[in-house]
Image (cartoon, rainbow, N blue to C red; front, top):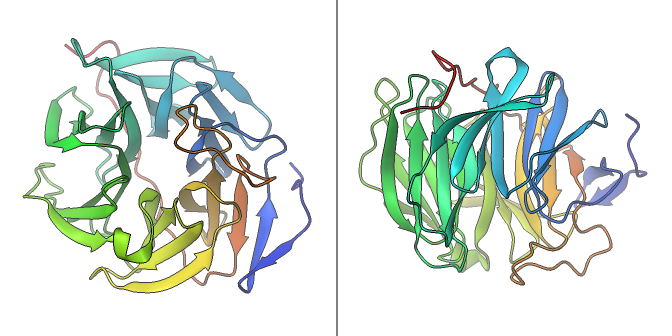
Length: 301
């Protein structure tokens, strides 16, 4: 699909607007099968750069790769597998008795393909938890008391897990055991309030640096593995929401953004609010995504 906008220059980078229509709540960019996927969370819609779009309803929090060219996603209180070839969904987990003021939000796979999902309070209170689901249906709660869980990502070797709580303006980290999926205690990794913003989405590059969408300051920040801010560039719009590396060399940074989150907390005043962008020239590259592979189909007990 041709890009929808001429090149722009932002802090020495080349920026392309690649979406043709804005999302209300653009989130969860994902480079998979040589193309880009993303969501409009509040619309319950999955988009592909080739022009396909799928309406699943509800509120989608995020997507990740699943076996057979599928996707695994969070929606309200469920984890679903979605097959773009048939547009069919399969329920993998339902949080029975979940608080109606909680929903599942940001997602990521660990390096072994376990599904991680951070919840949030719809009212911004600490109703969210960090969930883990593996391919045989084992569900764990790894952390509780999250206000708005975002920024899930892992170090290149998979031994450090990062989690942002957006209104708390903090990035947390914990030791993560790749063989078992067990976590150690969470610790403060970055006080992002010192940099004027909370973090929405985040990703880690091949060098172990964490790239974060600074939603309150309209910046994209890069933090070294020790938490030092080493670079900051202007985001293409005022409300950057999430980011992911992709392209043939995984050296393009794709950035989603918000037009109107539907909560009143995030409403863009930028003419390109809600669009998706590709940034070239950062001099960084990402890592291949793991794939979630269920060992059996159907609803997890």
